[in-house]
Length: 492
Image (cartoon, rainbow, N blue to C red; front, side, top):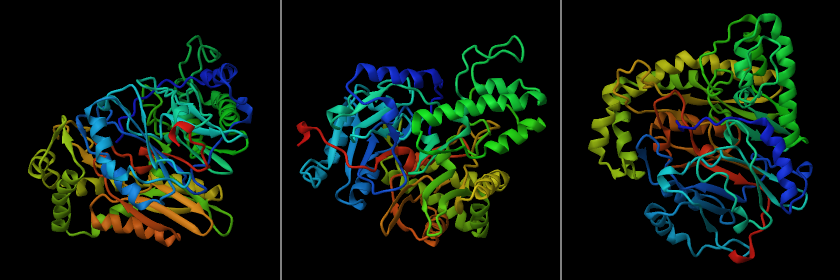
């Protein structure tokens, strides 16, 4: 799983972002709107070349970059943010074969933006640190999400994008918890529960609360209706600031308040991250958003652990062990390193011991345990009128909750964290392959049944390493722009 560093979500900073606009040559915030990351052809992909000190394990991200460059349309531009060290220089060299490729406007297809950070410290999941807006003049607005570790906020996008402006606002849980279509903005519960309350509301007693989540912990049943009014007021403001022209959808909101009213919601977290108010720590982990179908209903791809459990259950024990033994070879192909040192297949197999640990068996058990939660999310969104397509998801069974497996890293097989393209008659989904044939093929078949061309991608298995239930994927590692951008003259 992404080891996403939970950042304090300061709603006041969102409002303060409007004041920033007065200091830079940009249109007023009211003229800006959030760009769909679902509808339309992908024009530009933003990537972060970094490992984020991810528990000492990482891989050669250029494996994924090269696969994307080979399989996406040649008019799709790539902006790769990288640091100032030997690893970054090596990445540039590895991508040299693409140096001669040009976009239709004559600019380089692959562009690099240097940032002041070491590769080992750079956050690799480009979806999270900012949201992308545009204004009536087609300028790109980078709305920073408050990742207060170096080098964020990135303020140099204007070196590549003409007229680009960075706003240093803060949206708790980042872009991975917010999905946007032409009509809607999907915001995860933890983004809203993580909003800072400062010290304003203390009518429930003399205690002041840091966030809405903290306030909810202390509620009595009679207080819930009033608290919900405050929650909705914050949600409306986020909607107004981010995308006033779009309908706000908060997946599973009513499920949370139903449990809260009955006193059944379990407050087990100190901070508003993976609280249980949403099915996974970021909405893009379990909820993929698609285009509207021919009947006018929007398609949503919902993770299905029950389906994944049935797939694994049909595999004979020897087939499961064989699949587990094959995974270290794929990690080597991805350029897997441990503490910066390339590891051999034998070393990985010995250290992770997935066949001896029976990784797939443990995942099956965890999948069955989690199935009701994901089914509830699917049912909730279906009742809102969405067309639900279930996608197999086998969670990691090696969570080390009992501290008995020597912190062994497991794998989450997450196929709903994808890139979707929908324009004209084109329907594509760029989907990861994790190396277990039965799961890979079932996920591809689910997308194909909904009318999508499946473009399989390699280079994501190491990103699936986790000690928690769920893992990240392709959507997490990319930030996409679906409107024509204007490149700076220096790049022409």
